[in-house]
Length: 79
Image 1: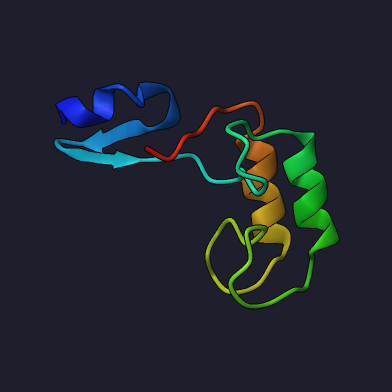
Image 2: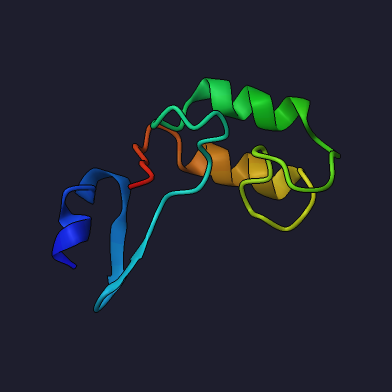
């Protein structure tokens, strides 16, 4: 767990030794904002492995738009 602490802004502890990250940073710049929301909206209906598919269900749709909107202004990082 100590290794994760340096990335505390980008993740949340979900349980003992279990961490998660906020979904929605489609352009991977570290913050979820209007740019990500536009990317998701513009890719609506696209299928396959895409950065805009923040729900990871294989299609860019309303679910992805809701996730990106709900997580707006959160900071996320990949260690």
